[in-house]
Each structure stands twice: as C-alpha cells, then as structure tokens.
Length: 270
Ligand SMILES: NC(=O)c1ccc[n+]([C@@H]2O[C@H](COP(=O)([O-])OP(=O)(O)OC[C@H]3O[C@@H](n4cnc5c(N)ncnc54)[C@H](OP(=O)(O)O)[C@@H]3O)[C@@H](O)[C@H]2O)c1
Image (tube, rainbow, N blue to C red; front, side, top):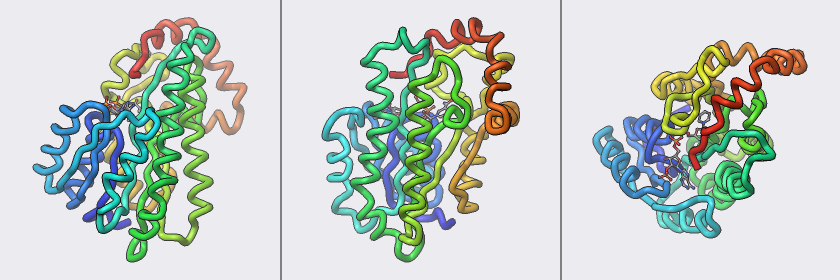
C-alpha cells in the first residue's frame, strides 16, 4: 500500500493514537484535516505535522453532536482529492451496566459508532473519486475488546464490535471500487484514555506504548492488511481461546471479577 502524499481526515488527532497517526502520515507528505473538540491540542498536532513534513488544517467539532459530520465534509469539499479517512476519535466509560448513566451510554454510541458510520457514508463519493490511481483508505480504530468482550465494558465493547463489523461489511460492499477498508484492534495502549484505568498486567491488561502500537499498525497498513491486531501476545492467546472455547474465557475471568470491577471503576474519558 502506497501511503505517501495522502490527503485526508483524522478524527481525534489532538493526542494519543490519532496524533501519532497524523505524524506518520505527515512524514510521508500528507495534507490533513485534524478534527477534535480542543483547539489547543489540534493546533499542537498541526505544528508537529508541519515539522514532520506534512501540512494540516484543523476543525474544532464535537463529533457526537448532530451536524458535526456535515461540517467535516464542508471543510474538505473544495479539496482536489480525499484519499484517507481515519475514524479514530473514541471515548470510554467502564463499570457495571446497571450503574452506567444513559448519558454515558449514548455518548459512547454517538462517538464510537454513529459518527464514523455517518462520516464514512458522507465521504464515500470523494473517497471513491480519490481512489482511481491507487486505493483510498478508510481506517477504523476499533479495539481488542471487539474480539473478546470484557466484563464492565459491555457498552464500549458493543460500539467497537459494531465498528469492526461495519468495516467488514463495507469492505465487501466496496470490493473493486478503489477504497481499502481496514480495521485496527489495539489492545490496552498507554494514552490519556487509560489514565483513569488501574487494571495491571497481572489482571490481563498489559499495556503497550503508543510507539509500539503505531509501528505494528503502520506495518499492517503498508502490507495492505484489512485486519490489524496490535494486541500483546498475552491478550492474543485469550482472543484465540474466545473463538475455540468461549466458556473457558468466562471461567478464567470469573475469579478476578471483583478485583477488575474495582480497578476499572473510575475509567472514564468522556
Ligand atoms: N488507549 C487504548 O488502550 C485503546 C485501546 C483500544 C482502542 N483504542 C481506541 O483508539 C482510539 C484513540 O484512543 P486514544 O487512546 O488515543 O484516546 P485519547 O488519548 O483519549 O484520545 C481521544 C481523541 O479523541 C478526541 N475526542 C474525544 N471525544 C471527542 C468528540 N466528542 N468529538 C471529537 N473528538 C473527540 C480527543 O480530543 P478532544 O478531547 O479534544 O475532543 C482525543 O484527541 C479510540 O477510538 C479508542 O477507543 C484505544
């Protein structure tokens, strides 16, 4: 896959995985629209993009709000071409389902699922037009939790599994149209999103650095992969077991449920 000189959109580009991806594409000569809620972090990423060899515009939008997707599309309508869309912005609230607020449930669905679906839908004409000489790219950042649903993350897991199946369906629907749809499944990654989560490697939540995750992600994308799993080996063995014998995963998790609930009680990035 040729990743040079891409022109496209990265949501949630002000920090974490989104910022790191912006810098990877910047180093390959990209022109990017960086989207998020906070102007200062987007401005910071735009400066880093420039320093890395790319160029960027910023758009301050809360993607969980009605009309936000239209404003993203308006921002790129005059571009010569769009051949990259990275649906990265996401949020999480952990905890026992019956203790979750409706506001938090809706916020995760709106940002993690509805926004990427609507944004992809709205940009497809431009992505298809941009994918004639080489494939355009839609890159959806799902999560390892889409492959193994973890207790106390039922809503987040639903949104991330939904995003993964959305990508799979769309990939098949767009076969031969010049749009490459890829899904990334990061395991726990050391970003601000995880700063309020206290589950450690001893509880099965080994964290990887952003650098390590991005290295695997970019290698998968360069190789033309559609499914890119950046989870550590410890979590991959659980993913395999979940396919072969899901009840064995239930049994393995059961003794640690109370400890896990305590460790993720404050996990919230909304
Ligand atoms: N870190 C992990 O362990 C992990 C594991 C698996 C999957 N992921 C997924 O990877 C993606 C990136 O995660 P991360 O760890 O880099 O998270 P992060 O550090 O919390 O960054 C999230 C980004 O999304 C933006 N954002 C949040 N709410 C938004 C909204 N309503 N509208 C527009 N932008 C919004 C944030 O900027 P503003 O606050 O300025 O809006 C921020 O730039 C997410 O989809 C996440 O679910 C992360």
